[in-house]
Image (cartoon, rainbow, N blue to C red; front, side, top):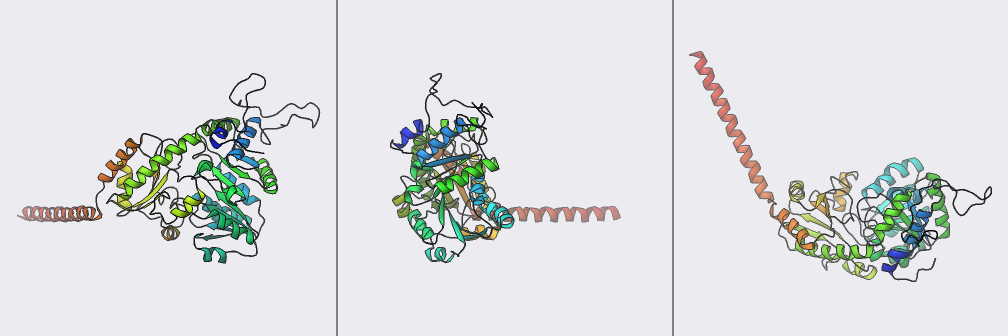
Length: 422
């Protein structure tokens, strides 16, 4: 499929056309589960909606256009995309995954694919080139990368990773959820498959769960098309329509997400309540130059570490009013979460500590509300913060008060006993 139009135009028109019968401008929702055939085995392109559906076809063609791919496939969730890709491997195959991969992906790798399908996994810091190269084995078939990573926002060089993977006979899968195809197109950088949880930025309205993949490989397309049909991991026609509707404003939303995220990152970096900020657009980010070289922008996710520990994080998150305390990301509304307790709770504590997913880490998904309202909410929550020393003093005062109360109670009991004996 050739994609010659510009991104914003593809968001609105790619894969879609007006209805040839009625002239309806919007792609119709085809809710039919089965399709009439002209003769046994002779049909108009569709037989049964799990196998193929006109609304889903339009959606898949749109996704392919946005990622500059030959093929696009839509699934019921991002997790079902992951499961389908791993189902394309065979027992004994080996996968190298970036170490701070999304918690749900790691859970599937460790607790489903590894014990049940005998797929072996290694988790490595891809920015440590020596460790990454050393992780390859003769049976390594696939490399799984998120960039930026979730939730620490490390950025990995896709071109270099693809070159190393291909030199070892492995394919590279890139999870592009955090940037969307508006800011990054991994296939143009050497990746073999790109995946998204469309629940996030692509749909953008926190009202659809879904996943997609895009690829130029006919072999992997056919494998994944078979998995999609065999596993039945398909989105409903209505969900396909909803995502296409969301895509029409993707370019506009991503611009505002990034603009506001920059302002938030600068605010947090200047705060004396904050230990460290991770936002690839900041010059202070260790992978800032890599991000500039392969991304068209820096996205709407901001991660930061408060001074203190879990108590300070809870105070901050509970003080927010505009931000919703919720998992997920990429919607028009601003969200805040505590990865160690929420999205990455399934990651073993010792590994979270190694990755920097500590108790004082907070992750923000910056929405498209007025940026001044976003900043005001964060300022109020930061101002509500109490320092570690203040909290310790409160604890000490509470303990002292408790001890005094206990002493008074004991004395009263003693005096009461003496009065009874008189």
